[in-house]
Amino acid sequence: MSKVKLFSGENIPLEMHKVRIVQKLNLPPVEDRLAAMKEAGNNTFLLHNRDVFMDMLTDSGVNAMSDNQLAAMMMADDAYAGSETFNRLHSKLKEIFGMEFFLPAHQGRAAEHIIAKTFVKPGDVVAMNFHFTTTKAHITECGGRVEELVSDEGINTTSRCLFKGNMDLNKLTDCIARNQGHMAFIRMEAGTNLIGGQPVSLQNFRDVTKIAKDNGILTVLDASLLQDNLHFIKTREEACADMSIREITRAIADCFDIVYFSARKLGFARGGGICTRDAALSESMKELVPMFEGFLTYGGMSVREMEAITVGLEETMDEDIINQGPMFIEFMTNELVKRGIPVVTPAGGLGCHLNAREFLPQLNDHQYPAGALAAAIYIASGVRGMERGTLSEQREPDGTEPIAAMELVRLALPRRVFTLSQVMYAVDRIDWLFRNRHLIGGLRWVEEPKVLRFFFGRLEADGDWQERLASAFRRDFGDSL
Image 1 (cartoon, rainbow, N blue to C red):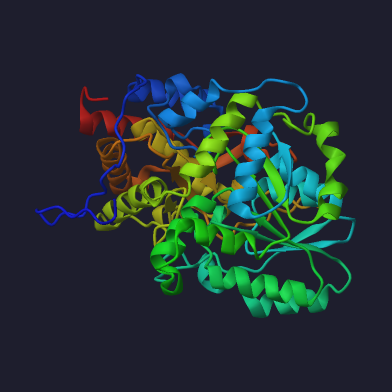
Image 2: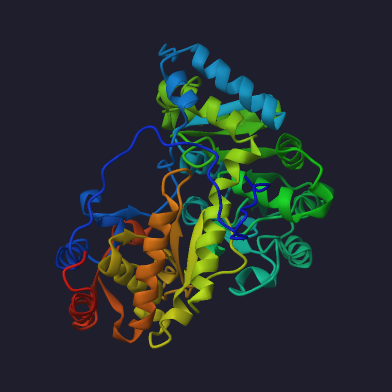
């Protein structure tokens, strides 16, 4: 796809696939969108999908499958134990990652649960380039804590840095020195979710894990967003330009003791698991799989999904397949930049990320600008995005509220799901919203869960700003949806 040029000179990503099955969408009128958002407690997770036009909440479990994946699902061996489906998946993971042992789990956070329960003790520290919500929750539940060591460029929303997910090596050395004997492991996220899907370079993976090995510290890779990161290493890291995607994948895996993943992202299907080349590490985690997930040859996954994952992992080794997502994201990001709309740059993986602090400078952090902007986007467009800011944090034991390093609204672009015209619709509505941003107010809690509050907590608007926003939409768009 990246080698195709248009005679017109336009830079438009070209899909290297064709659409053969479609699903009808519904775009409710703005009044219905306002009512749906209120009913959902201003939490986009609580919207009914029937009320959503474009679901850009996540790329998790909603990517389009290929024809070969769907065909493979018919081959599934549904034996409870000793399934040949498991053997095929295990063999593919061993081929790609070069790791002998595989423990299945029903999704990425289940793998995180097993890893945290095995290796984290009260008082332990887990160093990360940046945390992910469920990862941090599992670690703190076990009595550990997280230290984020991402490079300073990582939290600079507007940047030219090509690998903003890199871990700062000086911060890592200092962290190890301060926490001697209490380092549970070092976790790297290949595609740093909460700072805009920003990638990590192969060189940084190598540097971080060398420091870890020199200090006898376990290393763990979250490979859920690996496919986007592979594309960025291939296209942005000069030393890797001549490497194949398969070679880059193996080079990354060779750095780590444990690789875990959510196949809802990596593999285009629903599942996950933990890979390691060390028998003792595998044995230390193995007993938790049948206790919390399922037997060792399915781990809570549907065998049909496991067959699809096996094919999806092989397809991930094809640059023409994995570059579609990042190129669509870059296109959407550039279109918003043209309109002066604040977004995270350079474009990363997973989705386009709006900078809510700059979009809504009238709001303070305790008014949850990213949450308010996500609600406003839905009212203006029917597009469901996700808040990735202070709402996604959780309160400290003393009740204080940590303020997120970044206030982002993530507009995920699931792989091979949306067309460019749909992307341009979202850009158009966000452009209108930016011109009317003065109308947007904040949110306040009505029901606040103690853990992972962003999933199912409820909020209400400060004042009547949502009604005024809907009225402005109707004034400007007339009878249009």
